[in-house]
Length: 221
Image (tube, rainbow, N blue to C red; front, side, top):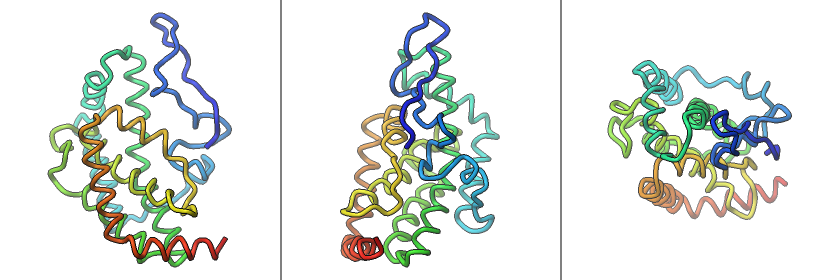
């Protein structure tokens, strides 16, 4: 991920914003969610218009259409009580960017798994996260919370992809620490811990195949 980059000090008071609102991906054409891709690659990457990913895109669009941005601002105002109005709006923009990038996350991971012959391990993990995104009731239901209701779904997807990077060899070599920390602040410790547990349970189900995957990645390298 491209280092550096800070949002400008708040107009109200001129103080530095909270570290949670810094944008380290804003320089040199890098993106937040896919730091291994340029902005042009990010914008031109096609998400399939059928199947589960298309359903996720539709859920995000529906959440935005139901006053999702306003609900997201209200949620962030409560989650970050010390933030200024400008910082809340900035955080809402970042959160929206994270949520809208989830289908690209999933499509890119599926593509990489297919190209490297790792579908047997990666796809079950992605399907687990996709099912959570699609189920009508979750820890923060989007039917009543708009875009804020997709924060937990997005966190689970990113956490699962991050877990794939924790083996002895990299799968996609994405730096996902920032979006994980950012979403943790917005969804709270209790919900993030429950989602972490769900992500680890999914990893445990394919633990044997994971060893084979890392061995194959090592040989490819």
